[in-house]
Length: 252
Image 1 (spheres, rainbow, N blue to C red):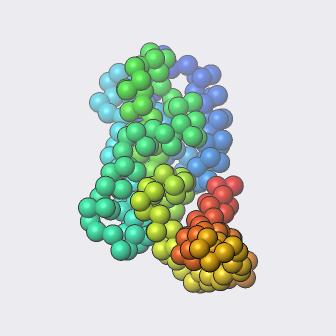
Image 2 (cartoon, rainbow, N blue to C red):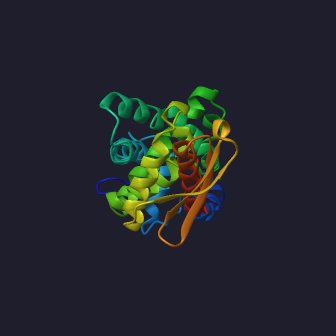
Image 3 (cartoon, rainbow, N blue to C red):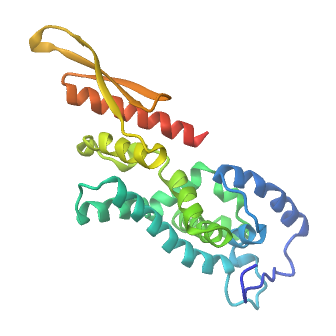
């Protein structure tokens, strides 16, 4: 499994509880959209130190958390660097700090119901909110470390980005609206080797209050529309709508 690591569960651990827990793990794999080749790694990431034998001096999950923290940071750093190519280091650092924060990780853990898949003693579940939130966020990082060991950085990166970056709007403030076109440009080029094509399909209203309707296409298969009081605003809306379509497709 993990070289030099060994899972030794507490002698009082409930065998029936453990078996029921193991049978539930395929559900988590579906939510992660990743299926482990080595399920020992998945289990190790989810077993809290309270379940280990009292003589064990560490939890393998904590070691995986240490690894996963670095994998997460690299995956998010790479995404931000390639997406916001016109932004400086300060902007990128601020965005990364938000995304990899315990608060944000805990939010994402809640979206997949991670808590019910963590094997932990009952008294640990009843921790105060702050400690419970830290537990779920730490377990997310343990999972990322386990996925990295189970496959490769490339695959782990895609799992992390699809899970953590599941809503572009959470990462882009209203003042960053102009980035929708650049985000779509980067995504379309990376995924389809295509550039988005914009066209004005309609203009309506008097000259002083004109409204523009735009269509954006990526290849022959993907397109979306948007409208605005200027051509630029209409293009931004169209790009944003197509981004949402891609996100919905990824999350299915």
